[in-house]
Image (cartoon, rainbow, N blue to C red; front, side):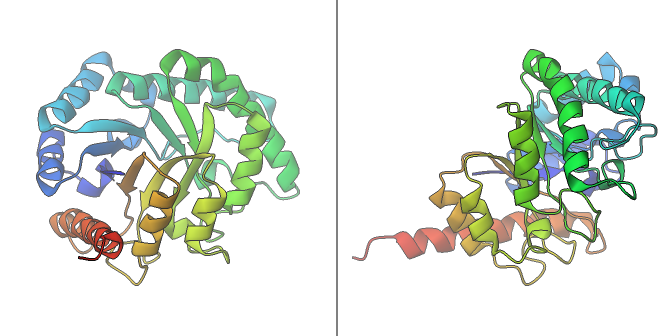
Length: 280
């Protein structure tokens, strides 16, 4: 497991300051929300892409990829009944794949609940069909850019589509490509009746990426969610990907959120190591 953090956590910090501080705290990767660069990814020019990539490299961080893909955009929707809207959405996802590649990343986390929610009268099955159509249109660009789309289930408090890992898995199976895999988020999984470690083990074959946070919208360790059994499950399935911190409540302050989140996760790994150490 490698630890990353989402860049919007740093609010209005300059990129270099944010990236340097993340590395100082022990993170190895940075995940980018495109709207922090420009609400329209098509307006993020070559020089700005190079600047962000070089700032991360200078700090010793790897750009993991992008998330909040459609946040602050207009005119895009994954499950729209309008074929033209779905076509535009697929084209825009292609642009995000190129942005991801240019920044040095590989993963596109598709959350964006407002741009995927089912309209009234649209069934889950119809929404899955339309979403699969959009993602399938993107596959040639994902191949060209060497990018993987990671579908993120979100709890019912966030939206009404893809509320469970099982539902997301059905969409992924319908797309049927190694370029479309699963993203799991601890806050979202906490809304499911199934224990988080069981969800992780059940979907081990599809798991591409992982977000760490607490149901209280803060970072890992800022609430009651115990990450030791979660990290044990990730180890049990030999998860080799990123664990990326994503928070939604910045009230504790940037520095405290960034530092204490990774200190807590490192402490959880240390507890796992001590539990498995041979007796002397």
